[in-house]
Length: 294
Image (cartoon, rainbow, N blue to C red):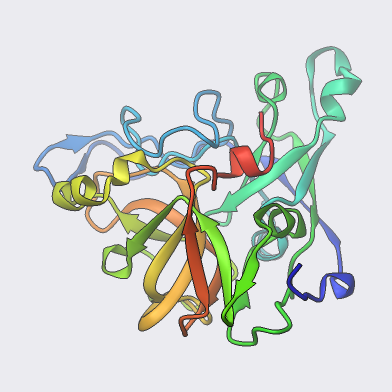
């Protein structure tokens, strides 16, 4: 196992409420193919789409988000939630209005699967729980992963990566490189919305899906929500930027889009401005399989 500082991490409780859907611009929105659509965006409790499902093809969707999005009304709490919660952290229902007060449902563990630039954190719960959740139900996360380091690789920065996911990925070492399983490798030239943001710990950036030629050439329509992807020539050490020879590994957190510059979004989990990260392609590199999500 790669040497880390796991024993030095500080675990903290952060929380938010199951959110109501956020409004997009009223009415229809123009898209790159010359048409328009009424976007379904930032749903709070998504009964239909789950991690492991396709990132493409959802009717009316602009960046569809899987599972349950949680949100804190207080700005300071929201910043803490989106900054400290890491992918694969455990989540529990603290104050849920579940019909019949079913203790088994309340005891069901959820798993953080990503975060988006609106400050919402996405959580996967078993379907039997999602079907009975209500907007406003309180979810608490055991936030762990902030400050995680790979001790022998100072040029590799760890971001948004919970200890459970690190263990599931089981990165290996060969020839001075860290080998990470990914579902796909994509060129950095496709990265769009979010590139240039200044906070690498909170938010996401988009793998543009509005070029039909690129989608066909790279088979991007095979991407699934929760896939691990490697992005060539992108460094996220201090915010996403182009850097020749860099590699960023991230998790696909929301779906594709027909809006210019947007697409399936990625939370960075490992990044290096050098060629230290070596992606190893496997279709099993998805949170649903790695974390055993139902």
